[in-house]
Image (cartoon, rainbow, N blue to C red; front, side):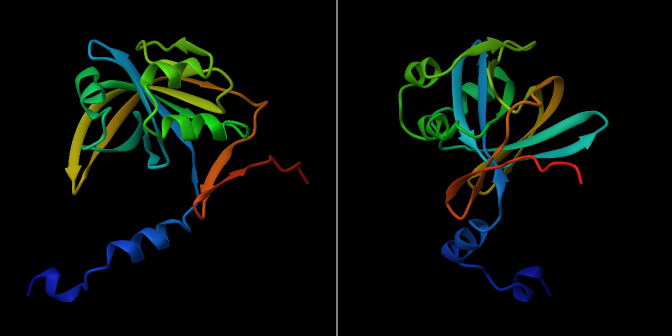
Length: 171
């Protein structure tokens, strides 16, 4: 007996609606290298392990930025702060790449990938493994440098909208 006969298929819309109820940090993923400079907005980012420090980032193979990330094999995960909603929307749309990057201040990470000034955290990474599942690739990214800010508060995506996060005072 196969697993296919035991597990009913979940409809795409039902899955997407349920996933809208799963809160996530909002990130702008950037790269710069031989294939050029590119960036996109993503919430599909998470920690894999701290030894070695590794994140995963999911990227649709049909995305216009996909070939740039695949060739550069490095990226920076810039976790957005409250107030970065417009920047997130800009990087999540069809805006030309030069206009996306001109909307904020950037510095260069160890790998050369763009680091967003004012991000809650920036994880500079080298892509060490790529696994294809369905329409997306899961990029396993070894972290080579980290920059973070204690001053800014985070930004979450939940129920198809942005929600600023505030740090709670110690009790």
